Length: 174
Image 1 (cartoon, one colour):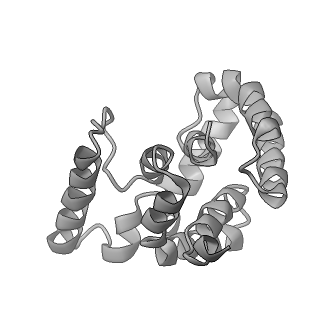
Image 2: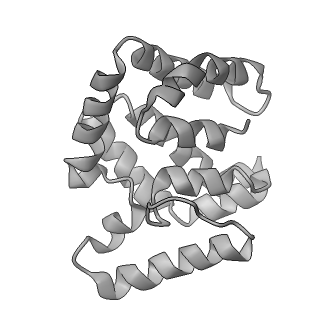
């Protein structure tokens, strides 16, 4: 399981299936050679946070964090165009959906194509260099979102920081 698949699962709305798979996710993190030490520590801390509260509390926190606070929206084009500027946002969403189709991916969800967990799910299918290049297009938005979550003291900030750090072309030079 790639780090992008793990991040996708952890950034999606928490449900019973996620709770049941937390030990499996922890084991995947433990065994991964492609997740850096600092990333593992951040992921373990977040998993500890999730396991410290009941599912209903996780869900309430998620809704409060992402659905009730526009500055924390996981719909990335919202941060570029806002909800009211459909003239620019619509074509960006269509282009992203077209990219998924170009890769033979059929999106079986009611989410918009710019929903970060969906983007990360797609990214998990890419080779590492291609994933970095793909995410680098959203680096500024990911940085803004990570900063907003950090300022709010959200435990989700650590996850966004991981995504942001992997969305920089300097990783390709290493």
